[in-house]
Length: 125
Image 1 (cartoon, rainbow, N blue to C red):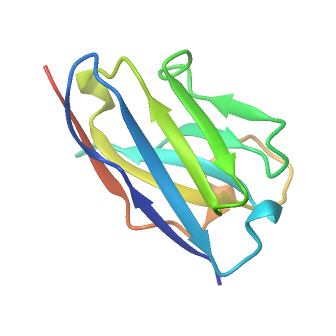
Image 2 (tube, rainbow, N blue to C red):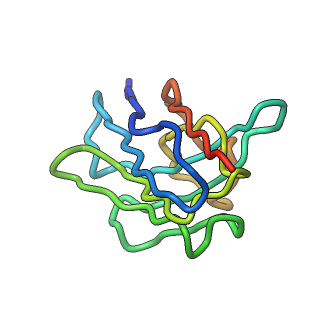
């Protein structure tokens, strides 16, 4: 059973940066492809970024492309989300999850499991 713990959220001004971390345990991290999602108050959960277990493939939502970078450190069992040029619309609870080894789009939350408790990101205008 995989356990995921997100951290690094906080309050930041528009244009600022944050780096989120997601620490994994309970399964060999290097075998897991990972994703970041977010959910703003009153809205549905949405895909943010994906990284393959080999670190070769990444994918981003259009809303964050060019501003966010997903990366991983298999020696630390951790996946990161570097967020730059933050906007008020990035305000949300951010979650990481493990993607199942199935065919399908990276942005479909149905293919993910092991969701962490989330970390709040608030961007003030």
